Image 1 (cartoon, rainbow, N blue to C red):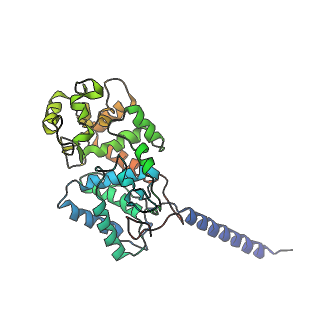
Image 2 (image 1 turned 120 degrees about the vertical axis):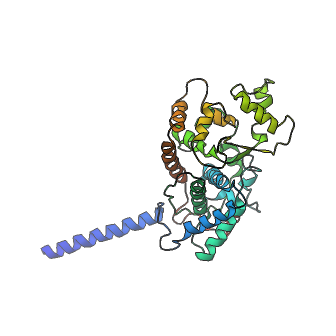
Image 3 (image 1 turned 90 degrees about the vertical axis):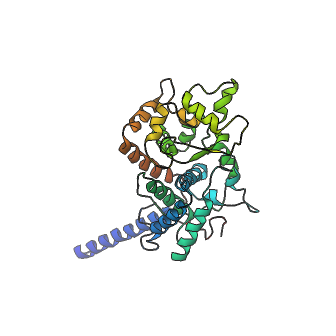
Length: 333
């Protein structure tokens, strides 16, 4: 017959075994965590911030560009840095997809960040995590919110240009289209309106909105939802048949700062892109109350933005033994 002390010892041993197994399973699934690099590259956030601050000295747009880069990465096949891969014998780069080419930028800054991180912590930090950190730091340096970036992603060894061509929200999307694309990524209407607030800084080319200025939907007239004074300003910047690469501020009020003015602009019918103004239509829509709420409460917008960014950052990340840690963000190892 087993003694009480022996039974207790076996029970403790069994409990420890279950704990070890549980930890191994948790490690294999690779849950993201805020302190993922706490012991392997504790200075990674500082390194990323230093590189972005250097880039900002000559490029005030870079914060918005890095945020956009992270967004376009996550929406294609998850937050896996697939957007950073160049063309190769086996890869059709997502950089050349219609929503990305001549639009998404900041690749060289990511290269500089990666080089600095590799010097400090060789082979440890993924390009996907660098994108996530760069997005948060770029927003914060522009006066926007800070949020706890979850880390532990690994990098994809594949890209999907065709998916990039069909998945990304487009400047001429209707509200129905926008909702559908966000829903397909398990993001709701609140996430849609909140993350669209990223257009509180950055630029867009005339090519992406000039159809609203002259021949909206083939009518031969401007988009009737455009504020008439704003319309005239945009027509001067983007004359009919002019250079489609000319840049316009997404937020005409505070172009380089991250704040809630994007939403007050929508209330004045000063959304630059059709997809912006679709969030505040003339008819009833569930997005209107969210826009109104953010337009009068900067803290509410900031808090929600951080939450939606964390949610987006969790879109299908590669973790554990999936993917790899690229040594060069532009190519697989």
